[in-house]
Amino acid sequence: MSASTALSASKLETLLPSMPSPSSFSSISSTNLSVICKNRSTSLQRGVIRCDAVSPDAFVKINNGASDASSSSGTLSALEQLKTSSVDRYTKERSSIVVIGLSVHTAPVEMREKLAIPEAEWPRAITELCSLNHIEEAAILSTCNRMEIYVVALSQHRGVKEVMEWMSKKSSIPVSELRQHRFLLYNNDATQHLFEVSAGLDSLVLGEGQILAQVKQVVKVGQGVNGFGRNISGLFKHAIAVGKRVRTETNIAAGAVSVSSAAVELAFLKLPQASHANARMLVIGAGKMGKLVIKHLVSKGCTKMVVVNRTEERVAAIREELDGVEIIYKSLSDMLTSAGEADVVFTSTSSENPLFLKDHVVDLPPASKDVGGRRLFIDISVPRNVGPCVSDLESVRVYNVDDLKEVVAANKEDRIKKAMEAQTIIAEESKQFEAWLDSLETVPTIKKLRAYAERIRLAELEKCLGKLGDDIPKKTRRAVDDLSRGIVNKLLHGPMQHLRCDGNDNRTLSETLENMHALNRMFDLDTEISVLEQKIRIKMEQNQK
Image 1 (cartoon, rainbow, N blue to C red):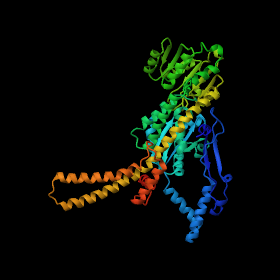
Image 2 (cartoon, helix red, strand yellow):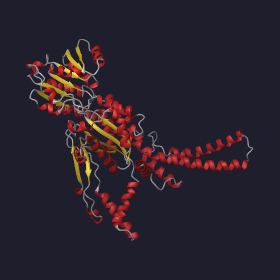
Image 3 (cartoon, one colour):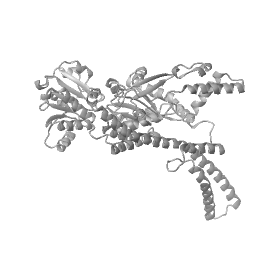
Image 4 (cartoon, rainbow, N blue to C red):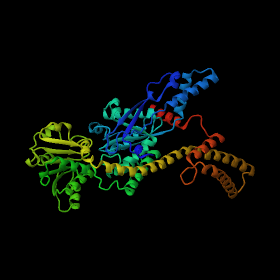
């Protein structure tokens, strides 16, 4: 994988024009494909496109196949054969890993906050997603900078459609509007994207460590949830390993800032230089983000601040950790009063409703003259803690997570260099995960082959024991049973070894899959209805009850 491809900052959606008549397939060229890109403006690289467009050669192949079949049968029209071909491709389609998301790179905070799902609701969201007809597994990654849904879809097109409709229903945002800001990635690209996210490459702040903790939390919350299945859990666990390895083997985290530190930097950037030493600071929320804000304020020389939190316990713990800093605790009931006494207000709570609206702020006393009389609100929460209407007031300036881009735009060349180092690791880990994922395709054949052999063993064992009579000793019966098991296991050992591809030998995945297809043919292990179609039918029947 080239560095330029790996550093892709554009998330692509491919839309095909309406289906032409079969007779026109052979004339389709690459220019007939309508490719629409959702370009992201990031500090890594611009204008690089990762593309999953359907090749026009595929249409020519379909047309040629239909023509050959038509000439041999003489009974079916090209259109009828195309329809048959489409159905066949659908029933034999493999499950796909898909990520549908909106991030700070593609969507404004006004949209992301409507889609945000609190951690406590992730299990219910997974259950709802997996109840959709074409979704088998799911996971939610919802942070202040992104809202991403990872699914195993039994059908790419139908699965994406169902998830988009679910997102629209949850957020009250029309599907057409969501499409304008979403990014959509399949299989290898989805895998690479999550690895980049976990490594901090897709973060607003390159290399920030909090996103790795958030990916870990997805796995922790997903444990025990039915829809958090083998493929998705395997993907996220591998992403955690990638995130750790990138931070261990590269210097991407060296000197990296977090969203919280960027918020502090932004505040000091907007304050007059002369007010840095005596500006009055208020931090609302003493969770992970709030604690980091406090620590970065201290690193900037602040020795006194007010912290508003639901309980005093967390504030007391932070106070003990930071010697020589005066941290004054205030309860939520004192929030407005404390805001009126502060020059800079940082908000970082998980409240789903705004803490500050225009009516709350309009009557607050002005900020001190040292800061120019205008109060700063630095809101790093999603959903936002400060209502957008507050920015209409002349006495305040409101900034949210999207405004942090101004801070993190510095040192762009250094960021690209660090990202390129990490991409080498991500490319290697992506191949390993895809090999593991592809090897799972042989599992049904292994199970069916063992079941086939066991049926024969039991039938022949019953014949043998019948001939020996009913009065044979239990020891003899057990010995005959063990003998039959031993013979079967030894006969299956060779085929089973050739159905496994774990990277420990020189056998390639293609060889393993060839062996799988050969065994399916030799022992007639294929079923009339594909496993995928069976899953879809079962889910649809369940949803109709």
